[in-house]
Length: 322
Image 1 (spheres, helix red, strand yellow):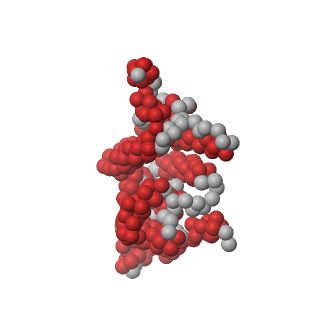
Image 2: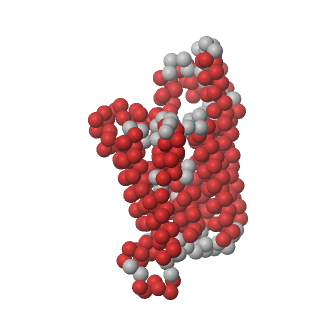
Image 3: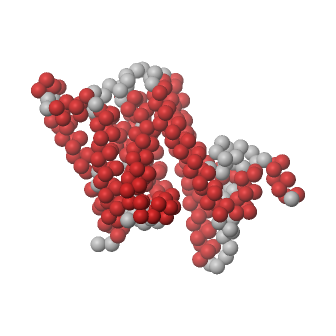
């Protein structure tokens, strides 16, 4: 069995414990017998958010971590970043205690599927349509940094941290399926922001993919690579893909805020702060690459970090004169 097929099978089987457990819970649930429920069933019924966290901890943090140790690669968490929000939105919508506006739920579930398909497509396109071809470069850097201690530190830095981020940013999905309220203009504003983010991230990632692919062809032909992407959305922003992703999550926050649960912004805020740090890491990595360092420093001086804006001509003129 080749590695690609083996990893695909592992990825499909890995979440089954949580899926089987939850469907068993739903099948055995009967409102007429609530007074006779077992302790475990009663706890699962009355603590939907805690149950989601428990399943995440046992199935993702523990099981995925063990698989990552056995394979010496924590690649699978990247794949499931695109899947877990879809699983969570359906979990929140199907839980026996769920109460919500059906049209709002339908809109959010549809948007979540579109977001997931977009991000999943980008992941496999970037990885040449292979499962687990490599793990995130940041994990590689941490592996080198912590050496023999990485095996246990990876549990916290790769998996526990992901639980905090993923459950946190998905809190609006929980609120949307916990609070019933009539649709209003803010639902359509939220939808527009979410859709704008998805479209922006798609085009930014497509332009980046075409740039990387083009550079690979130049390298194969023995020609010099283009040092920096400065066309399309990337002409106006150094990280338009990151901005698109943030618009998606903050759009969900507005859905929850509209239902009187603005506290859910904490997840999107933490994720944004994390992405700020990732932006710093990415840009440091860029200027360490000799063939693009000078071009990228000039790019930094003239181009907005996230928010698309016109070039800084003053900085560009100064750099040219220098």
